[in-house]
Amino acid sequence: MGLACGFHQGSTNCCGCPETIAVRNILEVAEKKTVIVNATSCLEIVSSQYPHTSWGVNYIHGAFENAAAIAGGVSLALENLGKKGNVIAIAGDGGTLDIGLQALSGMLERGDKVCFICLDNNAYMNTGIQRSSATPFGAWTTTSPPGRISVGKEEWKKPIVEIVSNHQIPYTATASIGFIPDLKEKVRKALEKKNLPSFIHVECPCSLGWKFDPSKTIEIAKLAVETGMWVLYEIHNGKFRVTKKVEKRKPVGEYLRTQGRFAHLFKPGNKHIIKKIQDRVDSEWERLTKQ
Image (cartoon, rainbow, N blue to C red; front, top):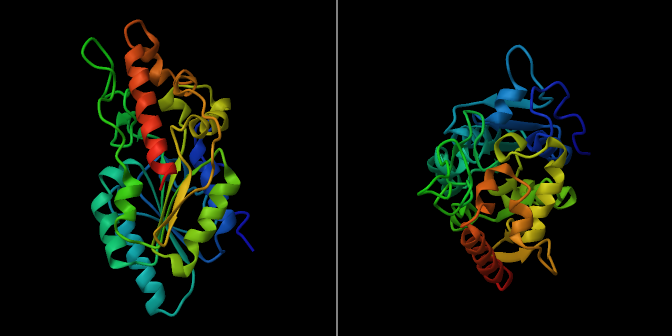
């Protein structure tokens, strides 16, 4: 039976927060004997401010950069003590793609029995909406402001799923809070002992940093998939499979227009930037769906 009450009400998250939506559904799949190792992040701040907690499972808050290392140690400790249970490391995009990448790589290389989940809201939202290597090309952040000589962030998103899968681990996947059944099925697979270590990259639209109405969180998550800005797939024992096929993708402009962080792209003279993003999405879609 899944853990229905693994994450309780009373957290201090923003309205429409995608991360608590993700966590509640992740814990519904996990067994009751689960240890969560949480990097410093939005999720940690809103859920574990002493003396309060939203967690109904064993919970460890480490530093920004070492969730994977701690989780690996917990996994080995449980094994040596003869105890069973899931070990899940959760970090944001900063604690996964940037600050925590070294520890994550080490965890994967050692084959630690851990499921690592990245809740990706595309920037360092907890510390002031600074850009990360997960921030998409053209997006506004406080450290990538658009102007006369800048279109916003000037680099493409780091391909973390490919980096992780090249460690030759059993299971890697992308997921979205807009498609909960797909997310839950991937968590179920990722927690199977034969599939550990595993990695799931979850897209989490942030109303504060992306600048949209909090009531639109799920709608924007779905639109990311429907436009091809976010592709849902899994790599299981080396076999690639798209898990949500979009027969007719919507133009990326429909997705970009919903968010204030891309508002500058719709000003006169920037149409070529939107086309550049569309071309990139088309190319990536073609590459991924032909594997």
